[in-house]
Amino acid sequence: MNDRIALRGLMANGRHGVLPAERMAAQPFVLDAVLSLDTGPAAASDNVADTVDYGVLARQLVAIVEGEAVNLIETLAARLAEVCLADPRVERVELTVHKPAAPIPLPFDDVAVTVIRERL
Image (cartoon, rainbow, N blue to C red; front, top):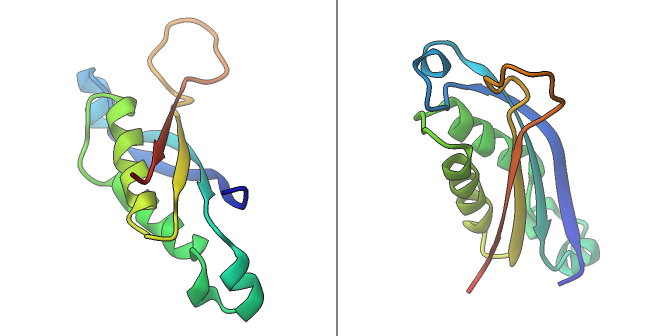
């Protein structure tokens, strides 16, 4: 499928990480989700019910980030991708979790994990 809906730069705070300090205080996470799906039905009907409502999806993704803590952002990314694929119209998702405040004792711009999942 060549059609895509992209939700980029979604911000949420969570307590994910392996270090105790990461679990004590929430830290920022930034999400990018690129969904592959057929947007033709929505284009034809001009009705949000015929597509992925990215406002609803954004709230679902933030709830995962703000919810149960995990050790690895790989695990977090996989859980977020599952939420995207829960909509049967989504055929593929590329989901990136950015952790800009990762506990790295050197200057850096970003740490990110990207997972790609497809409907089987």
